[in-house]
Amino acid sequence: MQAYCLKCRKKQEMRNPQQVTLKNGRPATQGTCPVCGTKMYRIGKA
Image (cartoon, rainbow, N blue to C red):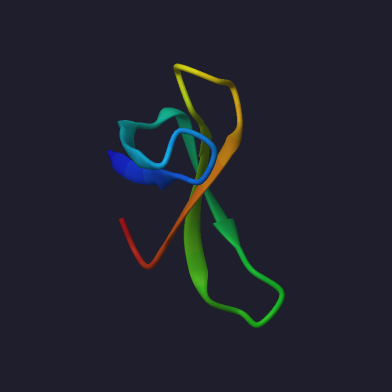
């Protein structure tokens, strides 16, 4: 799954994607950037 990395400023393939629920109850996918290691989020059902 791809998500936008704020540190690299481009779309990257997410490493270790996990389903999470945000504070407001919306579903999201959380993972890490394979290039810089920053946390990445993609809001919405995967």
